[in-house]
Image (tube, rainbow, N blue to C red; front, side, top):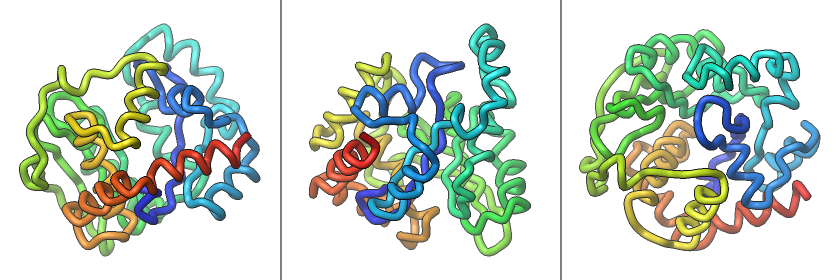
Length: 237
């Protein structure tokens, strides 16, 4: 999404209730995730992408981490994390693990001052837009929330299976990310394209998700997306 011109402030953590967190992957890719808020701000201003490492910005949360790891399941903290983005984002793509949460959380984002947000749930338990089945979206736009469904075929994307999308540890997922950024096609790229396209739409950089998908494909194929990763690595190290 950043390669297409959207400003992306990703708020994330290491793995707690899953095998691999966004922070684990970025670290494996060579990004220094433990930088000061000033460096994150510089990244956002200069290259349009920054990673906000939750433990550094919400130190009190560390007391909940051991319990979350012991439980090994999703808890209220999986919802609080995206809502507590320190960047104060007003445009957001937020994935939830339960379809019943899409509309309530879209209304929470409305109350928090968001302008345009998509809260998504992929049928089958995915906390992102899915290419395996339908995705439920509660969209906040122009001060109101509407809920609807999309499917991969709506965007010219081939339907995948959960096996096609299976990830692994940080090393595996980082290699996968590099393959996608270097132009490798397949089911893994397709789900990235769909979610980045939705993020571009939420950022009001596209008139709809379909246009966002096309902009994402252009961003990857032109090398712009990979250039953003390289720039992020350089600025954080």
